[in-house]
Image (cartoon, rainbow, N blue to C red):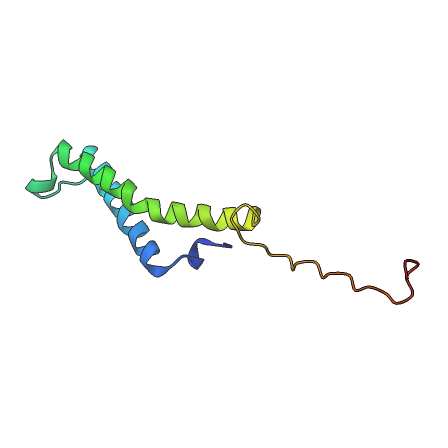
Length: 96
């Protein structure tokens, strides 16, 4: 996996929503922004933090999985090398 842009669009959307939730929680907790009444409490900010982290986990997992497949393809069950071809018996071998 070469870049973040190679992730599926749905994973990128979840990542963006998670960042927005984390940013909104941070701004709300530091009193930079006043949010509407249902989400202005500290409990709601904690819920937004956990939801933001959970929404960002699929992108982290996808990046980790792509890196693991690139670094150690044998451990991930993917063999990038072609299997060795069996040697054909030569007619002029010393054993014949």
